Length: 235
Image (cartoon, rainbow, N blue to C red):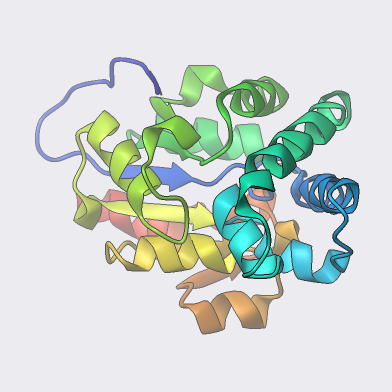
């Protein structure tokens, strides 16, 4: 877990938690391709569309969701290692989504605590953070090692909140996958959905997102009237 000393002040503190892959970095389809190649190497032909709809879950859950239940589970770790190896070859191609750094900066400068609530592997998270280039505005960041269970379990969000010292009731989550929304819903944290990860507005809304925007930039342009702005005003 990466943390910095949050700024202190009077009263309660509010926080914005951000998913990273597909929310702040344009990596959802790179993960899709990496899983597809890892599955092919293990002898499984899984359609990319099915893989994309599962991106955002933890790797263990992706395997359980997409591969036969009677498979040799002893090979699962090899498949996940293959995915990691393929995805690492895409690190040079990673790009921040439009407005990602500016959105984190604005949230931070308005007095909100900012956390990256990601279940990415530690090395992947380092590459993602480097891509965003906004470490000065991030108070904490989680990786897969900080959670016993992956999304849609809420463990990663719990870890991020604990790192910040903020209550779930004083937070908002921003994510691009239905799994993000399901995880936050278990803690009754409202989730703002972004469609830049490739999930439709209708799917995000059906999953329970309180608001939908096309990108970090679109959310930034409407920040004052968003659930984030309302949270900040309330506290």
